[in-house]
Length: 158
Image 1 (tube, rainbow, N blue to C red):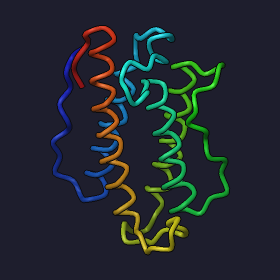
Image 2 (spheres, helix red, strand yellow):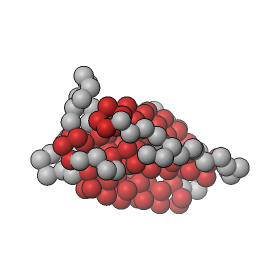
Image 3 (cartoon, rainbow, N blue to C red):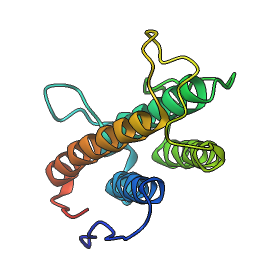
Image 4 (cartoon, rainbow, N blue to C red):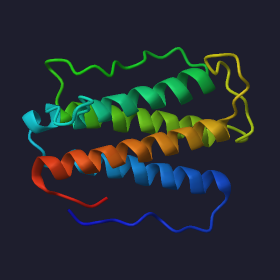
């Protein structure tokens, strides 16, 4: 797997955060490409984390934080449990579909200072915080996927 470096940009804050988030999303997806279904479901670390769960979890996280909490949309929140019919292809497709919805919300928001409609606990969180949280959460889980993929078949690289 070819290592890809993060983009180096001279853009405004919103564009920079979105570009770095997209880089991390794509890094996570690249980690499951070429892995057979059994390996993607395989819990090879003590926590039980799998490549398939990481994809489903990030799909859920983006849905919860941006679509529901920030935008206040009445959307179905995807389940991040691994179900018998789940495949890496369906998980990647679901993740991509959600990140396009999320990007649409972010692009149409007037400001990163706009506050969440429901931050979950009543605290006044803004879109800037939500995007930074998703960036760190995605990067963290992409790192987990790096380790899992290396344990599965020795492949490394972002």
